[in-house]
Image (cartoon, rainbow, N blue to C red; front, side, top):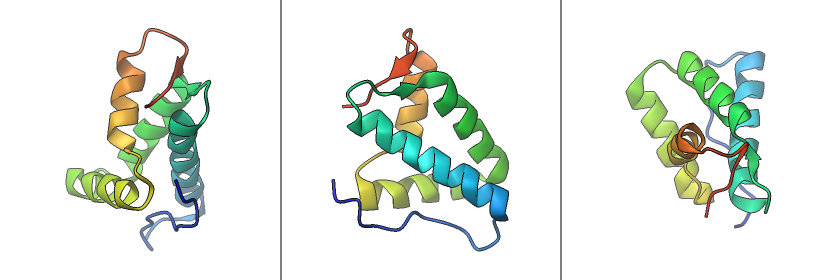
Length: 93
């Protein structure tokens, strides 16, 4: 994947919210790109923070869709895989 893209952001986010979202985006990328995947508890924690930053389902879906369009990676599918994964790490295909 071409990593020369901008992450989807909302101007209303404060500094901590932007950092949380950046961590989520990079962790999801790692789940797809790293052969060892990423710690599933980190994905679950960051995704739950994402849901508290963006309580609107419409905004959550918009951000996931926008991120998928630019990266080919899904926030939601990665979170689902982490929730349902028995091992410590989650690895996306």
